Image 1: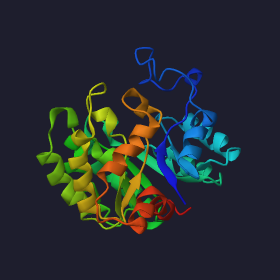
Image 2: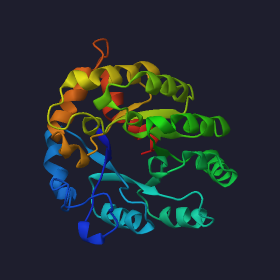
Image 3: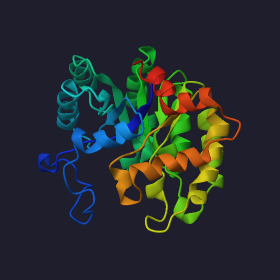
Amino acid sequence: MRIDAHQHYWRIERGDYGWITPDIPVLYRDFMPDDLRSMLEKHDIEGSIAVQAAPTMDETEFLLTLAADEASILGVVGWLDLLDPDHRKHYERFGQHQKFLGFRIMIQEMPDSSRILEEAFITALQGYAKEDVPVDILVLPSQLEHSAQMLHQVPDLRGVIDHIAKPRVRDMEMNNWLQAMREIASFPNIYCKISGLVTEGDHLNWKPQDFIPYIHHVFQLFGPDRVMFGSDWPVCLRAASYDEVIQLLQEAMPPEWGKSEQNKLFGLNAKEFYKL
């Protein structure tokens, strides 16, 4: 099974995508399953994980409704605010949908990432960890220290770092990111999505070697059993086509990895992580 473990769908008219503006014309339009279908077929990808792109309950409901009638959407990662006292009620409502897989915590959007260390947040996350709920973690390099502190309090969390924590490729900054990621990878239930990289480089003039050292570190830290391919389509279109995203990952593949490791990266790890 080949799976794209991270992509998005949206309808602009829904109005809750504050970050998608007319200033980004390549993204400022609707993106729906028919727009992705040919790419999935071209690369023999059975389906994808649709991940929330707006911090609203309504958008998660939109994705779940879309997934109900679309075979290529294997599951949906929704949104929850764990500081909302009603988070459990929303989770149970989403859980009535067969394709609801888990949720994403958007640490990236927090002006103060230390809020993830508040008692209410930790208690909520500990509850979901006990139930082995898959949790996506959207985080920036500067927030990895707080994220590691969070994981020390929730060490059994079934989590995945989105976009390899968005290292500052444009600035060629690696040391602080690598040191923090080494600690994150020490938690055995934490996976890493190799996704969203091309938009962290120079959108117009990137080359594979800009990203390959970062990818190699992720392979070394997480090993073949805890990494997943994700296209981050259509966001990737700001810098690269779907074909180019896949080609980049193929170029970065360790030469000693055989078919077994490649199958894990391109689908089997996502299947296990999300319990498909």
